[in-house]
Image 1 (spheres, rainbow, N blue to C red):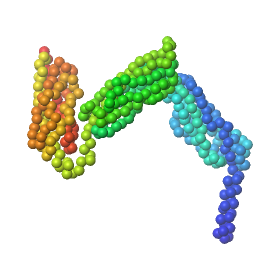
Image 2 (cartoon, one colour; image 1 turned 90 degrees about the vertical axis):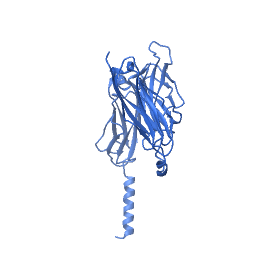
Image 3 (tube, rainbow, N blue to C red; image 1 turned 180 degrees about the vertical axis):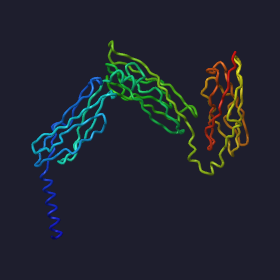
Image 4 (cartoon, rainbow, N blue to C red; image 1 turned 90 degrees about the horizontal axis):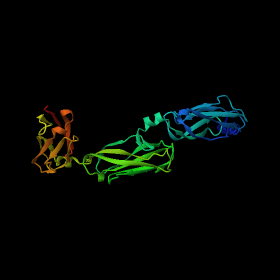
Length: 365
């Protein structure tokens, strides 16, 4: 058989295959379950498909985009004119709020793939809401109150998100307070219908951050019901945003590093022995610059409220040293045991953040 004749036969077979095949015609593409309670359990719907083609076809598989949606479908051949069904079951357990889920149906007919969509809104059960949204701001519930952004280089910006949920029976207007130049909260959306999820957007700009190293800021989320009814609950929640603002040393050249400042500490631990109640305990640390440029001391910081730092240097010339004082108030030492860290932030590219342990005991009266 000639190559030309073979090509003609193959083309004819392909044409016949395309002409004699099943045709997929859906009677329903979408289903909205509306609003229902999580405690009522799973909900199901059935969507129908008719084979309007000239030959039988089958559904080869049905793929859900989420484990929350189970599927069941006609597995026998679908002859021309016959109807097949796909049943979709949504499990609302631990999933309060609005949802939209897509399911893909694959067949041997045309088209090979079809998309079905289910939507709805779940009113969360009290137990689920308490577990997933434990922070209360009136009728609005927040997923978390602490937002740790981790280490960020000075000059960088970052967004974080707090999931929220309207657990009330009224529409809420959500606003924020306490925003600062370096950190802002924004409600998205501002108006949240009952039973719907939303978000609080946290925007952080290190260029405006007031401190090097650890920064912690307290901001406010407020919710106010639209209607004045007995079930309407207004309220506020505090949100704590934390970030470590550091200097980016990664772009320094080898030559710049060789000419950089270098911090040397005289100790890695300061021991306050037998601190006496009613008397401030004192200690010192020495910071020396063994590098080839002036050392910029960004910050000396200790999280313990019993500790204060005095005479903290801001600049140490090459070859020089400076002494900082450490004061401890025994009355503020929790449990009578001091065990904390003093952090030193500088522009030493080899070690921009150093730490010294502060330990001691308060003598018993």
